Length: 308
Image (cartoon, rainbow, N blue to C red):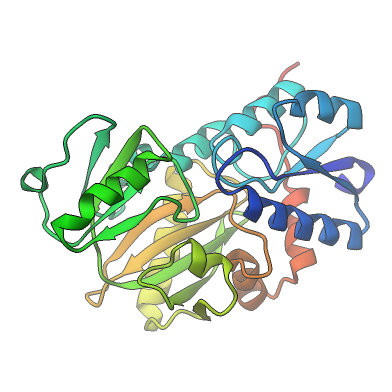
């Protein structure tokens, strides 16, 4: 159906993840064209509504990351313009991007997530007030790609970590550090398609590890015994559904030696670069080439709000 429409690949944008989005969008655009779609790239700025109308865009592949792209903003605009788009709708996107609200949704669904406290700018963060001790993680509430994230092992590191996190948001999470395997579950068409294990060269799977070749080892399938592997996949699917996600997503987990699976977050617009995990999971777990994955995603483009 989508091959008869003019598709806009929305990339770039205004967030701290702009450079990654440019790479994702470029890869997606090449894949669409190679598969016979009529696709153009659109670098998203504040005039995007006018550009979409001027270009005559009939469907959108959202390759944005971070604020204004993953948080429901662009999805809401596309709903108003009645342009079908890839990925999750407005509410699911907003919930997944907001780490506090997504953790609350996980808890309500019985999904395990690390204990935490939320702080707004200006509030004091006292170690004695936390229900857990060192080490812990400090992160902005609404950023992706591990932007602004720090692991705190001693009190002297806290001030700098708070300053970094508050650079990106008015709210932050202070979260108990969970030691475990970093496992990512790919979800496509409402089913898990595999789980990959990440072994970063750095202390954790930070921005550099995610987007620098050679900075992380990818192991597929994740080194989990069969029952635990299936458990991780089903928890990933449960987290995807708890937020009301549609189309596709990548769910980040920490799996402890005791077999507990802690959900870190659901990425409703996971990276689509040469180093990105969802394309690797789809290829190895479902036998989908990058072009086939991109085609599958755009063919599921939708509007969640129907207007007569």
